[in-house]
Image (cartoon, rainbow, N blue to C red; front, side, top):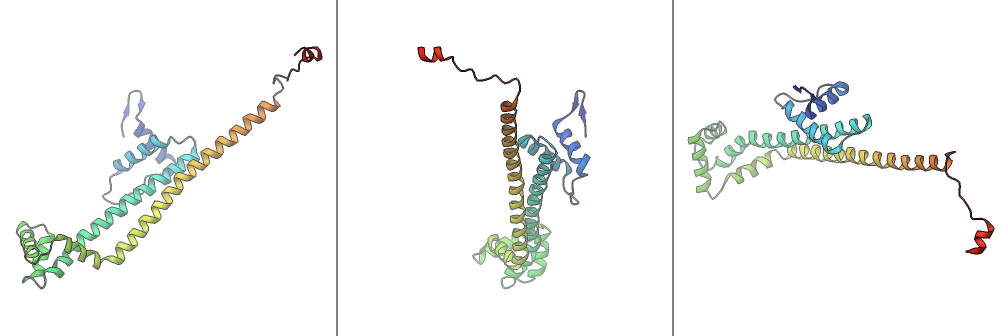
Length: 202
Protein backbone atom coordinates (compact mmCIF):
# COMPACT_ATOMS: atom_id res chain seq x y z
CA UNK A 1 0.00 0.00 0.00
CA UNK A 2 1.41 3.37 -1.00
CA UNK A 3 0.54 6.88 0.05
CA UNK A 4 0.92 10.16 -1.73
CA UNK A 5 2.96 12.97 -0.13
CA UNK A 6 -0.27 14.72 0.82
CA UNK A 7 -1.84 11.66 2.41
CA UNK A 8 -3.23 8.21 1.57
CA UNK A 9 -5.18 7.74 -1.59
CA UNK A 10 -8.91 6.96 -1.58
CA UNK A 11 -8.18 3.25 -2.04
CA UNK A 12 -5.58 3.34 0.76
CA UNK A 13 -8.10 4.91 3.13
CA UNK A 14 -10.62 2.19 2.22
CA UNK A 15 -8.06 -0.49 3.07
CA UNK A 16 -7.21 1.14 6.40
CA UNK A 17 -10.87 1.43 7.39
CA UNK A 18 -11.49 -2.16 6.46
CA UNK A 19 -8.47 -3.64 8.17
CA UNK A 20 -8.47 -1.59 11.35
CA UNK A 21 -11.67 -3.05 12.73
CA UNK A 22 -12.50 -6.04 10.52
CA UNK A 23 -9.08 -7.56 9.88
CA UNK A 24 -7.85 -8.79 6.54
CA UNK A 25 -10.56 -9.78 4.03
CA UNK A 26 -11.32 -13.51 4.01
CA UNK A 27 -9.90 -14.31 0.59
CA UNK A 28 -9.27 -17.80 -0.75
CA UNK A 29 -5.95 -18.95 -2.11
CA UNK A 30 -5.37 -17.40 -5.51
CA UNK A 31 -7.88 -14.57 -5.09
CA UNK A 32 -6.71 -11.06 -5.85
CA UNK A 33 -6.48 -8.90 -2.72
CA UNK A 34 -6.03 -5.73 -4.77
CA UNK A 35 -9.24 -6.58 -6.64
CA UNK A 36 -11.10 -6.83 -3.35
CA UNK A 37 -9.66 -3.51 -2.18
CA UNK A 38 -10.65 -1.88 -5.46
CA UNK A 39 -14.21 -3.17 -5.09
CA UNK A 40 -14.34 -1.92 -1.51
CA UNK A 41 -13.06 1.51 -2.52
CA UNK A 42 -15.56 1.84 -5.37
CA UNK A 43 -18.51 0.76 -3.22
CA UNK A 44 -17.48 3.16 -0.46
CA UNK A 45 -17.18 5.92 -3.05
CA UNK A 46 -20.72 5.16 -4.23
CA UNK A 47 -22.37 4.76 -0.81
CA UNK A 48 -20.23 7.27 1.16
CA UNK A 49 -20.76 5.64 4.60
CA UNK A 50 -21.14 8.34 7.27
CA UNK A 51 -20.60 6.41 10.51
CA UNK A 52 -19.50 3.02 11.83
CA UNK A 53 -22.99 1.52 11.38
CA UNK A 54 -22.95 2.34 7.68
CA UNK A 55 -19.33 1.17 7.48
CA UNK A 56 -20.39 -2.26 8.79
CA UNK A 57 -23.25 -2.56 6.30
CA UNK A 58 -20.97 -1.38 3.51
CA UNK A 59 -18.44 -4.04 4.49
CA UNK A 60 -21.21 -6.65 4.50
CA UNK A 61 -22.35 -5.50 1.05
CA UNK A 62 -18.81 -5.80 -0.36
CA UNK A 63 -18.21 -9.22 1.22
CA UNK A 64 -21.48 -10.55 -0.19
CA UNK A 65 -20.75 -9.11 -3.63
CA UNK A 66 -17.33 -10.76 -3.51
CA UNK A 67 -18.97 -14.06 -2.49
CA UNK A 68 -21.28 -13.85 -5.51
CA UNK A 69 -18.36 -13.29 -7.89
CA UNK A 70 -16.50 -16.19 -6.24
CA UNK A 71 -19.44 -18.59 -6.52
CA UNK A 72 -19.97 -17.72 -10.17
CA UNK A 73 -16.30 -18.45 -10.87
CA UNK A 74 -16.58 -21.73 -8.98
CA UNK A 75 -19.58 -22.80 -11.04
CA UNK A 76 -17.79 -22.01 -14.29
CA UNK A 77 -14.61 -23.77 -13.15
CA UNK A 78 -16.57 -26.81 -11.99
CA UNK A 79 -18.18 -27.17 -15.41
CA UNK A 80 -14.85 -26.58 -17.14
CA UNK A 81 -13.04 -29.23 -15.10
CA UNK A 82 -15.79 -31.84 -15.39
CA UNK A 83 -16.19 -31.27 -19.13
CA UNK A 84 -13.48 -33.90 -19.67
CA UNK A 85 -15.84 -36.62 -18.44
CA UNK A 86 -18.59 -35.31 -20.70
CA UNK A 87 -16.27 -35.38 -23.72
CA UNK A 88 -15.50 -39.00 -22.92
CA UNK A 89 -19.21 -39.76 -22.48
CA UNK A 90 -20.27 -38.07 -25.75
CA UNK A 91 -17.38 -39.40 -27.86
CA UNK A 92 -17.53 -42.95 -26.46
CA UNK A 93 -19.87 -44.26 -29.19
CA UNK A 94 -18.15 -42.18 -31.90
CA UNK A 95 -14.39 -42.78 -31.67
CA UNK A 96 -11.88 -45.26 -30.34
CA UNK A 97 -9.80 -44.39 -27.30
CA UNK A 98 -12.32 -41.73 -26.29
CA UNK A 99 -10.91 -41.64 -22.77
CA UNK A 100 -7.35 -40.87 -23.88
CA UNK A 101 -8.67 -38.29 -26.33
CA UNK A 102 -10.73 -36.62 -23.59
CA UNK A 103 -7.69 -36.48 -21.27
CA UNK A 104 -5.57 -34.84 -23.97
CA UNK A 105 -8.45 -32.49 -24.84
CA UNK A 106 -8.66 -31.38 -21.21
CA UNK A 107 -4.90 -30.72 -21.26
CA UNK A 108 -5.55 -28.40 -24.23
CA UNK A 109 -3.57 -30.55 -26.64
CA UNK A 110 -4.15 -28.90 -30.02
CA UNK A 111 -4.33 -32.12 -32.02
CA UNK A 112 -6.78 -33.65 -29.54
CA UNK A 113 -8.92 -30.52 -29.56
CA UNK A 114 -9.12 -30.66 -33.36
CA UNK A 115 -10.02 -34.36 -33.25
CA UNK A 116 -12.78 -33.76 -30.72
CA UNK A 117 -14.22 -30.90 -32.73
CA UNK A 118 -14.11 -32.94 -35.94
CA UNK A 119 -15.74 -35.97 -34.30
CA UNK A 120 -18.52 -33.85 -32.87
CA UNK A 121 -19.10 -32.17 -36.23
CA UNK A 122 -19.33 -35.51 -38.05
CA UNK A 123 -22.03 -36.58 -35.59
CA UNK A 124 -23.93 -33.31 -36.00
CA UNK A 125 -22.96 -32.22 -32.49
CA UNK A 126 -20.99 -29.35 -30.99
CA UNK A 127 -19.31 -28.23 -27.78
CA UNK A 128 -22.76 -27.13 -26.62
CA UNK A 129 -23.61 -30.83 -26.53
CA UNK A 130 -20.58 -31.49 -24.35
CA UNK A 131 -21.45 -28.66 -21.96
CA UNK A 132 -25.06 -29.84 -21.78
CA UNK A 133 -23.79 -33.30 -20.83
CA UNK A 134 -21.49 -31.70 -18.27
CA UNK A 135 -24.37 -29.78 -16.75
CA UNK A 136 -26.46 -32.93 -16.58
CA UNK A 137 -23.69 -34.75 -14.73
CA UNK A 138 -23.10 -31.88 -12.29
CA UNK A 139 -26.69 -30.67 -11.90
CA UNK A 140 -26.85 -31.26 -8.13
CA UNK A 141 -23.65 -29.31 -7.47
CA UNK A 142 -24.63 -26.52 -9.87
CA UNK A 143 -28.07 -26.26 -8.24
CA UNK A 144 -26.46 -25.92 -4.81
CA UNK A 145 -24.09 -23.23 -6.06
CA UNK A 146 -26.99 -21.37 -7.70
CA UNK A 147 -28.91 -21.49 -4.41
CA UNK A 148 -25.89 -20.07 -2.59
CA UNK A 149 -25.62 -17.29 -5.18
CA UNK A 150 -29.31 -16.44 -4.79
CA UNK A 151 -28.98 -16.38 -1.00
CA UNK A 152 -25.98 -14.07 -1.19
CA UNK A 153 -27.80 -11.78 -3.65
CA UNK A 154 -30.76 -11.50 -1.28
CA UNK A 155 -28.50 -10.74 1.69
CA UNK A 156 -26.59 -8.18 -0.39
CA UNK A 157 -29.87 -6.44 -1.19
CA UNK A 158 -30.85 -6.47 2.48
CA UNK A 159 -27.54 -4.83 3.45
CA UNK A 160 -28.23 -2.03 0.98
CA UNK A 161 -31.81 -1.66 2.22
CA UNK A 162 -30.57 -1.41 5.80
CA UNK A 163 -28.37 1.53 4.85
CA UNK A 164 -31.31 3.20 3.10
CA UNK A 165 -33.65 2.63 6.06
CA UNK A 166 -31.04 3.80 8.51
CA UNK A 167 -30.49 7.00 6.57
CA UNK A 168 -34.23 7.62 6.22
CA UNK A 169 -34.76 7.02 9.95
CA UNK A 170 -31.83 9.26 10.83
CA UNK A 171 -33.10 12.04 8.56
CA UNK A 172 -36.60 11.82 10.05
CA UNK A 173 -35.23 11.85 13.59
CA UNK A 174 -33.09 14.87 12.77
CA UNK A 175 -36.08 16.69 11.27
CA UNK A 176 -38.17 16.08 14.40
CA UNK A 177 -35.32 17.11 16.68
CA UNK A 178 -34.85 20.35 14.78
CA UNK A 179 -38.61 20.97 14.93
CA UNK A 180 -38.63 20.50 18.70
CA UNK A 181 -35.64 22.76 19.14
CA UNK A 182 -37.26 25.43 17.01
CA UNK A 183 -40.54 25.25 18.95
CA UNK A 184 -38.94 25.33 22.40
CA UNK A 185 -36.09 27.74 21.82
CA UNK A 186 -36.24 30.60 24.38
CA UNK A 187 -35.02 33.10 21.83
CA UNK A 188 -37.65 32.17 19.27
CA UNK A 189 -39.44 35.20 17.96
CA UNK A 190 -42.91 35.57 19.56
CA UNK A 191 -46.01 35.78 17.44
CA UNK A 192 -46.92 39.49 17.17
CA UNK A 193 -50.63 40.20 16.89
CA UNK A 194 -51.82 43.57 15.58
CA UNK A 195 -53.49 45.86 18.15
CA UNK A 196 -57.29 46.18 18.09
CA UNK A 197 -57.16 49.54 16.33
CA UNK A 198 -55.03 48.13 13.58
CA UNK A 199 -57.36 45.19 13.25
CA UNK A 200 -60.39 47.53 12.86
CA UNK A 201 -58.54 49.63 10.31
CA UNK A 202 -57.86 46.64 8.09
